[in-house]
Image 1 (cartoon, rainbow, N blue to C red):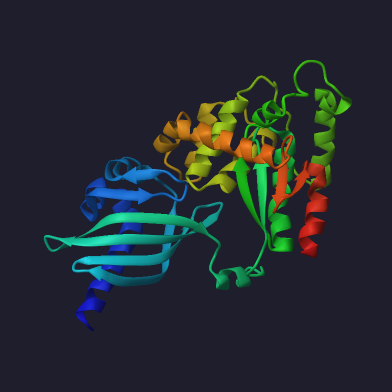
Image 2 (cartoon, helix red, strand yellow):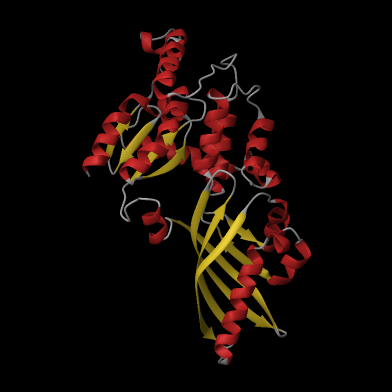
Length: 334
């Protein structure tokens, strides 16, 4: 084996160590692998330094990392560029990403200087084994976890994805932000039509739930913090967990009868999905979280959205849980 092959294999072993539970839960061991000037560009757009990594990563739980498709090349004396795939799984979901790292050799020890992750589809062989086509359309799903119709629609997305080979991109938003951008809010004051009457909406949601064969529990009060729930969904999006967390939060609000719908519930759901509770707690109040919600609202409104749930296939819009049939029909014909 050549000396180049030897140090490439060492880099592979170090990447594997960075993903192992034994190293990730030990800040001292993890710290030895990371250079002091380390920078990571997260797939959510956040920038991480060594201190932030050592503060949050040891608090993770319930995650399993699997490395594949490793490749490496020398960029210069004592500098190696590594690329690979990672699948991250917990009890409810699997996420995939492409990874890129720069390693430098200092004092006879390799250290991680830079890292970047980009969300990706599963490898082609996994998609085929799951009975899905390699090429599937992306459907943007603008949702608010405080919306009963977002919950109802969310219960059907896995079935539609399996049937049509599409992929849903969960984009959290405050429905009120979209309505404010339009300059009118039908939920303010007396109902402008029967569809905005709370009693009607409850009966309608119950009938849809029966049709779908899913549970539905109306919250005991409408006086809960819609903004908090939206921020929680956005925080999960920044942690690359928009889909599993969004589905779990929608289910908690309307599918399981959880009460109160408070910060502790949001943190408990993050715990269940293996997200760092401390990091999630900070993100709930991070300006980046609010900006993500505002950005999603601006994007949805600019493309014609006027409420949630809203779906886009390209620039074709489908609004409402009751448009899922039209959405699925269009995806089937694509």
